Length: 158
Image 1 (cartoon, one colour):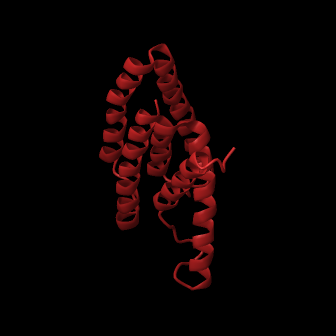
Image 2 (cartoon, one colour):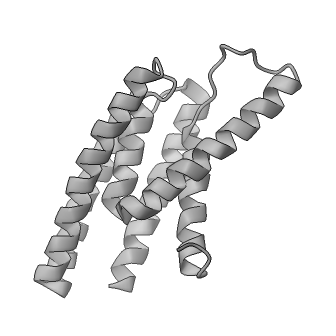
């Protein structure tokens, strides 16, 4: 199934790039972009099912369930942080789980949060942003999920 994994990662990368671009330009991630990513997961799911049978269907079902649970958890986080993380970010990270599973997505989320925090600290020190200003998170989540994928394939991540 490594070929399908590469396809899933490629699709996810394309949507992460689009989301990061939109988030940097408009401070929002379009729903139509994320909806398309979810729709494109269906033929990949069918291919997983056709190639790996029941095991492929179970994997895809698990990723879908994990995605829904992860989005619910992040929605609670968004509410608690007064939308410090936006609902577009919640849906983007849910999409990442749908394509790469919870383990890699959680690692990507954490790396992305640390990268965003570091960038925000630098921008604050340089006087480019104030304490109440927001920065787009999608580019950092894209870098974090990419690092999680590369780390896993290089044997770095657990």
